[in-house]
Amino acid sequence: MRTRYLIFLLSVVPGATLAASGVTFPASKIDLKPQSVTLPGSGARYEGPGAAVLNTNCLLCHSPAFVDSQPPLPADVWKSEVTKMRDSFGAPIGDAAIPDIVRALVERHGLPAGNAPGGEGEAGASG
Image 1: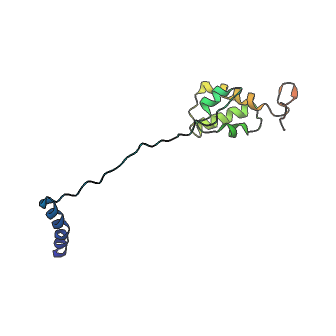
Image 2: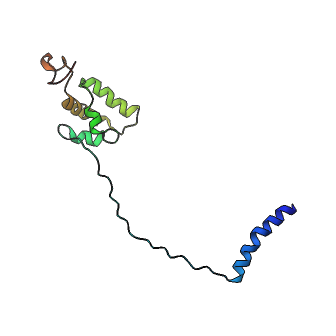
């Protein structure tokens, strides 16, 4: 107990003595200067068919390059992918937006070979 009292006195008494003596220390001058910061742009955005709906619903999580690197898929597969993004990953997509998103993705990517009307795939589609 005596040791604690001694430690208390040795830590408090010097500070109290300085405060009571009226000793002041000059404030150091702080020289603040304005800084210029360049914020990054909004990044890449979708362009072309369906760009508005994709920019609104997909850019929150996906870059256009990622989505555009996906293979051609049938509309029902795109619908299940979009629904999975909403239900499993929490994407803020309303029911009304899903058909528009699916349509935009099919327009961008085309259909796999053999799934296009007339049995022919889009140009460049691999099956």
